[in-house]
Length: 212
Image 1: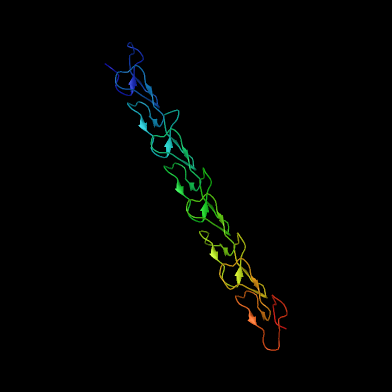
Image 2: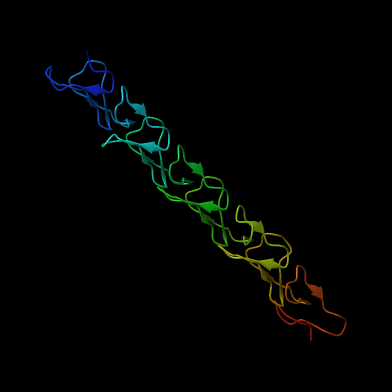
């Protein structure tokens, strides 16, 4: 009788059929076993090879599928793991990469996303964080930069707004600097306007912190 699928007889004088080892398969009546192809595997005594599911892969030793490491992924029947692109990440045994959420970023082949530093921001799937422009800042919510309120200002990449010093003011939100109070006026720290000097007092120069 011929050998059943999953087994073989090396020659016609063989007394019994031999099971195909893991990573190989055979059809009925064969004198040898076939090796599974890339992206497939078998457990032994098999009549066919099974396709590797998404997440693992096989490229040699086809007795099992190997798990793709974090930062990579594979589709069904893969013989290798593909690298996640910038702005994406994956855990081990993944069938796809996920986009980094807003407020984070990643380089290629990443297993996690990195939170932006204060003074920076990012949107979904960013490969780097963007520095806040002058007149804005970010601290807790790193998905966007917020305008500085009147009476304050900021430079690029700031995590807070700096109050205008006495004798200066900023009357608009999103200011990158403070202006000197004009002659005859003064201001306290953090002012959005300048105050006229009271009768009998004066401010002799621009940017006077208090009237004399």
